[in-house]
Image (tube, rainbow, N blue to C red; front, side, top):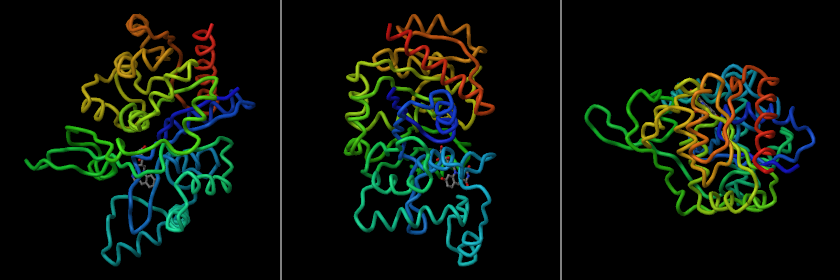
Length: 318
Ligand code: FO1
């Protein structure tokens, strides 16, 4: 079975670990969000691609859900000693190696998709990880700080500001000019099922859908598209998705996120048992809905969720 998954960071990566356990023989292609990418110290950092690669490759810092395990921060300390910032983004020594190799290959002319393939040759994530685009897309957030309205890079909003100020707009800069990376549209056309894991609907999945051609590719695939709610009981399971959902006028409920994606895209939607009362509302939006446990406490619970998503896809296909 060929499965295509649109993934952002931590939620997407943890879901993928469950999917691999639930469908070990499936051929999984991950279309990774690159809107979170940031250029620091002359290096290109791809947080969501690295989170998927490290999580599935066994190198992730499990508690954080990002960055490497067994990390040290000597390079970061030395940069700070030179007064070279920013200090608010925690890049570890092992993680720096990934960004050095990536930047070196990009400078040699390799596209991001080829670089990602090369990095994955070491990590063997067990899925094919393709960036949504080889073109530069960077999400910026319009905020008002001390009466001054300005746009900050998503990472500054997320990490330095901790999403503590209202996001007035979330803009994936460059998305309109971006093209799907090689293999993305082909994977969608050949898919048997397409999954939206519990990633951030705005800055992760929303950014992938903003690349012209991808939303159409999903709709034209003519196969079941099933998503899992990142919102449980009116609050994000992790992260601060509610902050960016507000920016696009979507209430932080499992049903509202399903309606936001729309029945033109989604055939099925899983909500947590805590939101069983919203099944009716989602179904009346033309999206098949089931309530199952959606808390990914370990690989087994994530595998159960993946099984439920695949089962719903078969129900929709019938
Ligand atoms: N998130 C934080 O909250 N603090 C950090 O210092 C931080 C550093 C970091 C370094 C590399 C990387 O790949 C991810 C990092 N993240 C950090 C997470 C990152 O902001 C988010 O994972 C994604 O961008 C959103 O999913």
